[in-house]
Image (cartoon, rainbow, N blue to C red; front, top):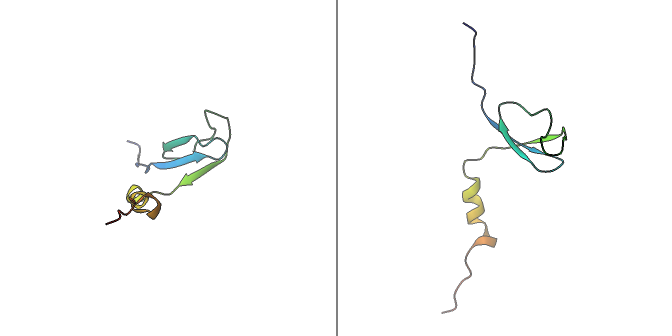
Length: 64
C-alpha cells in the first residue's frame, strides 16, 4: 500500500482578483481570472475575535 500522508489545508487568495481557495497546495491557475499569483493567508484561530474587539467596531459610549 502507498504511503499517503494528509496535507494540511491552507487558504490562498488570488493576487489578481481576490478569489479565495482552500486546499493543500497552491493552485496553478485562478478559475476566475486565470491568474497564477497567489498569496497564502495566515491561519489565526482568533482573527474574527480580534476584528470584533477592534476599537472602530466598539459601541459608542452613552452620555449619562
